[in-house]
Structure formats: structure tokens, C-alpha cells
Length: 432
Ligand SMILES: Nc1nc2c(ncn2[C@@H]2O[C@H](COP(=O)(O)OP(=O)(O)OP(=O)(O)O)[C@@H](O)[C@H]2O)c(=O)[nH]1
Image (tube, rainbow, N blue to C red; front, top):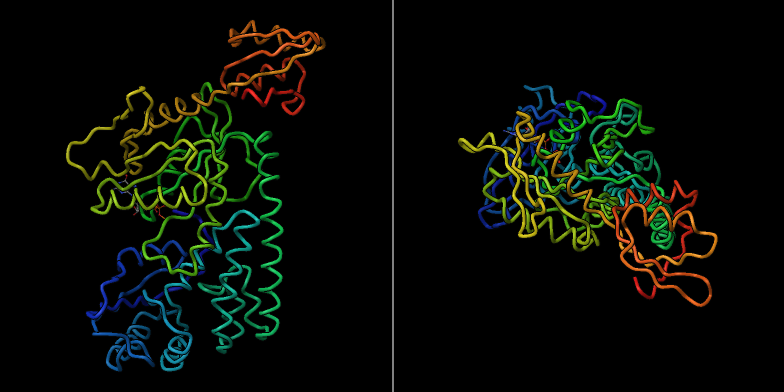
């Protein structure tokens, strides 16, 4: 699991089935989400109703039950697995004399903890502020605010003390900054591509086992790099892979069923970095009856954020839950690994997963038409020596166009041996 500060909060969860609706949330998933947010679920109060009560969402009897649960379990917060209106949230708080957060608030808290890029952070802050602006001011004690805690963390925290006008200004200014960040983004991304070491990003539904796999891949293997990686971010680690060299492994926030509509943008922003990955490990709980539907949804979102061009290796996790299943690699017709069956918990198959990752990264070949002048003799010789030259056209100008195909890693190595930087190489773009 994620390492996060232990705020020691204890939560009563509330999950109600509504007979008049069919969009039922999953109570187990909610428990996982709450745990992900660093809060301890101490009890789940369940019930069923035809439809929500407009004032208190639940009935008087249920409210009494929740009040008893707060006292019995000494809970700090009540978390509803539902979207509450601001006035419902306020009314329930007043009745229970305890902090109340709805499902949107819980998810936002997770996003706030995990957003990494500048844009991601802004987008999450925006969603938090917008969510909060309708919910001011509820008189939480100063102590509670200082302590932090679910729904009180993240960049928007101090905004609780400001009035609505300031909040609106802040929202406006974030919109502006987001626009600017977006304008600069594509440019920045191109530049970063050149310098960065390859990133392998774990994506998948919440509870698929991403964090478990992340820890397994980075702590218990010979490939985990010993040297400190210049980040305090627990979701980024460096590995040294045979034949590939250094690689960054990145964990991402999990997909969530029934993501509240207004959080879709914020969620995508937390995933923004994956569009720069060299390889995606799509972690899938192979034991989950919603497996195929989950895969479709993840692929759909990846396509929407423009990450569908990135090579994907599916990791079917939790094979220990399938009887007598042994780890294996599935390959496509071209012999390329497309799926690996593993258990992150037992470690079964982790070795072949590494093999498959190395194989997929090694596939990362470049195919260029390089313009070489009289002073580029060294690079030309090295490319020939490496057997990477497919064809060569000499021009009257004394230049030649050399068609090369080789692994990106080797290409970069040859450039460095030739004393050249990648941006100094002239490519014949018309023939790329
Ligand atoms: N049986 C079994 N359980 C696993 C395996 N991998 C993970 N789990 C369990 O599945 C649950 C979720 O694992 P996580 O690693 O937290 O999942 P995640 O995808 O990171 O979830 P989020 O952090 O919510 O996105 C935990 O209870 C794990 O112990 C596995 O290989 N086998």
C-alpha cells in the first residue's frame, strides 16, 4: 500500500441501497478507497431506502444508528458512499456533531494526495475548491483543521477559512494558470522526451494490485536501484534493467467505478504523466468478475487522454486466487509479449514479468533518415560499424542521407560516443 502520514482518523462508513435507483456503488470498493485515503474504516452502517430523504439523506432511525456507531467506535469522521448535497452534508453534520464527507470528497482527497504534475495538482485543487465553495463554512474546530485529515488536506485546505469571494478569485486564477500550463505542455513534453530515462507506468482499476506490484517490483528484486532517486515521491522508483539500463517505475491513482462526473477532469489530470511513459503496465485483477469491463474502461480513458499510442503490457494479477494457475507470458502473432500472469502477493511470475518488460522496452527501436555532412564522419562510421545502416544516398552537396534502424538506447549511445547531442542531429523529416 501507499506510505502516507498516519493521521489516525477513524471513520464510520455509510452505504445505503436505494431500491428506486440502479446505480449502486460497491461497498467493498468504498472501503478500499477510504483505506487508500489513509483513513481507518471502523464500521460500515448499511441500510436500504426507496430514495434519499431530501434533508438528511437517510431516515431518523438510520441517523441514530450512525450516531451510536460514532460513539461506540470513537470515530472522527463519517464518510458516505454517495454524493450528498451541500445542505444534506451540513444538516447531517449538525445532527451528528461530527465531520461528514461524501464520496466525492473522499475521492478528491485521494487525488490531492497523489496528483504529481503541476497541471494535475492545479486540476485537483480546482475540483476541490469548486466542491468546497458550495460547502462553506461549517465551523470545524481550529484544531481539526490544523491536524489535517480526510477532506482537509491538499492545496485547498487553507481556503476553508476564506470567504466565497476569495474562493471565486482563486478558482478564476487557477483556470488561467491551467490554460497557460496547457499551452506550454506540448512544447515541454517534447523537450523532456529527449532527456528523460524511460518511464514504465502502472495503471489500472483501484484494488487491482498496483501498489502491491509496485512494491514487489521495487523492493524485493535485484533490479531495484540502490542509489537514492532524487524524489520524495513514494510513487516513483528507479530500476536498473538488464540490456535497458535505468528505468523509472511510476504508480498512478487507480480507476474508480462511478467516478463523479465533475471529477473526471481531475482524475485525467492525475494520469497526465502516463502519456509520457515508454510502456504502460495495465494491472488487472484476473479474479474479478468485472475484469473484461474494467479492461475496456481503462483502455477507453487511456485513448481519451492520448495514451493509446503507448505500448501496453497487460499484467493479469492475483493468479494465486485461480486454482492451480502457473505464471506465464502470452504473446501475439509476432511473438511480442502482450500479457503476463503473476501474483504480486506471492511474487510468482515477477521474474518473467521483468523479462517481458525488458523485451517490450528493447523493442523501442528508432527508424530515421539522418542528414550527415562532411564533419559527421564519426557518427557515420559508428552507425556502419553497428550494422544499423539500411541505405545511404549521396547528394551533390557533399551530404548524405543515411537510413538507420536501431534500438533507441543504442542510438543514444552511438550519439554520445560520436560526441553529439540528439538535438544536433539533422533528420530528413520528409522521409521519416
Ligand atoms: N490474492 C491476492 N491479492 C492481492 C494481490 N495483489 C494485491 N492484492 C490485494 O489486493 C488489494 C489491493 O491491492 P493494492 O496494491 O492496494 O491495489 P491498488 O491497485 O494499488 O489499489 P489503489 O491504491 O486503490 O489504486 C490488497 O488487499 C492486496 O493485498 C495478489 O497477487 N493476490
